[in-house]
Image (tube, rainbow, N blue to C red; front, side):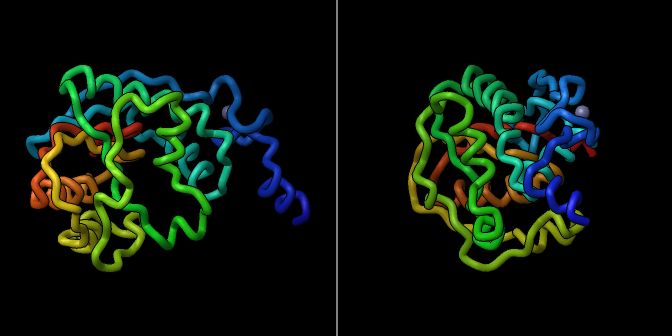
Length: 203
Ligand SMILES: [Zn+2]
């Protein structure tokens, strides 16, 4: 019991295979190779598929506060954003609105930290309050696809603007959050030119 608690507070093992060293052993460190797909008519660049090892790294990073893992994840997001920026030209980065309950629980914003952890931002970034929730939503990860869509659809609003935007997020699973971001930004006058994520689940 005490050992389990100690491991939780001061992890000594790899987040994927549970063998030292922490936070990741050499064999479990992720490799990235940017690929492109689509969400509706919007191009999506992603650095890796959302495989079981990657999902373990994300759970450790986001839910167990193993923030040292940012060093292994940030380069992937940086690659995806660089590729999107290369194809699209000048854009402004916009992040999905932060879920207040999760932020309180974690004490940090995992997506912002991935971006700031990847050297200097590649491009300008829109103010963090550009996109926001105007009603409460549940944690998407606890819901199935239809549940996610009805949970998030129509939940966001954006400060009016007209800039070209590159949406950046950590993981795309069903795409319903990023679809709602695109809808709210487009309704407020922005042009969502592309989406960059670190990992994408290929359904
Ligand atoms: Zn390992």
